[in-house]
Amino acid sequence: MAITIGVVRESVPGERRVALSPDVAKKYKAKGANLLIERGAGQSSFPDAAFKDVEIASDARSALAKADVLLTVQPPSLDEIAGMREGSVTVGYLQPHLEPERIKALRDRKITSFAMELLPRTTRAQAMDVLSSQANIAGYKAVLIAAEASPKFFPMMTTAAGTVRPSKVLIVGAGVAGLQAIATARRLGAQVEGFDVRPETKEQIQSLGAKYVELGVSAAGTGGYARELTAEERAQQQAALAEHIKGVDVIVTTAAVPGRKAPRIITRAMVEGMKAGAVIVDIAAETGGNCELTEAGKTVVSSNGVSVIGPVNLAATAPIHASELYAKNLYNFLELSLKDGALNLDWNDELIAKTCVTHAGEIKHEATKQLVEGAKS
Image (tube, rainbow, N blue to C red; front, top):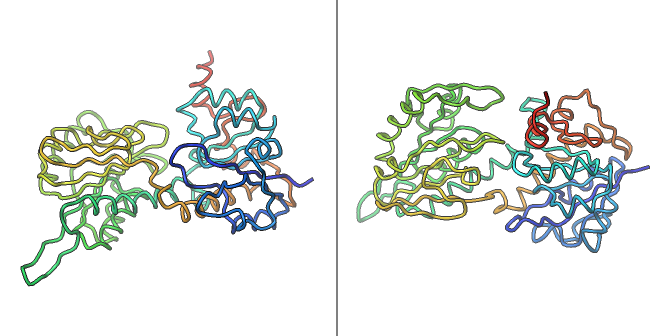
């Protein structure tokens, strides 16, 4: 019997994305699945009429009760979990390290849950990588925010009244978001520099036309992320960075590791050493921020006139493209198990096994299990 894949309206304030797009809905239908979406779940991005051959549920409760698989952007709420069928499946962001009660509820309802942020960072998984697809948008948007907030032009301009020098922009972190930020700042005509503690990023930064900033610290890690700096390395990095940013007009910080607090890179003292009118946009605001002054969702102006902006959920500010990319990521993940309308999970596939948080009344992800249930002797 064909499974039913369901989507309900996202309930987190400010979340404008949806886990299903009309184009991806056609792909699921071609695989033999039935589709069910709550009325208005596509919000302003995709009206109900755009979903062809998809059942429209009048409310979330009826959608949850019928769905064999629930697709989400934000983690399902406790009320939504209570409304899901026992033994059903949910796929999306889960943030298992933040809300143990949600994981307990999924476990107790015997729901099989997949946290897409836990997906292994392998070549085979690239088409499913929600972190990368959404980070691209965040990097792009962060630079637009910085350009809007800066009291200076980004590009060089030659006018009858004289020539205006381009803004000097520093991107901290050269992951997906950082590289997109570099590319965007370059397109806007700024003089761009990039920095990352992972040595392999130097060539990537330079390939985008930016200057690589040498701070004398190298911290290559595993899984595409940097290892944690030692106290000595952190002090060396901050001393070199403090001197360098005195002449910078805009900083965009992008350093983050899923499941952990954002590394603190820019201190209050460093901000106070910058010139008046400088702007910092901290993409990592939601996980504590890379800058000591960052407050999530707010703009803080330092005593010397530096604006520190802490945007949240940047991907949701471009909901159409963000939803299209995210929906494709989820489809590519489910396609591993979806055939002739049936979902058959292959637990020998590391992409499935390592992304799973709960299954059959157990917490399968070891770090989450220890967090929720405590270490077993």
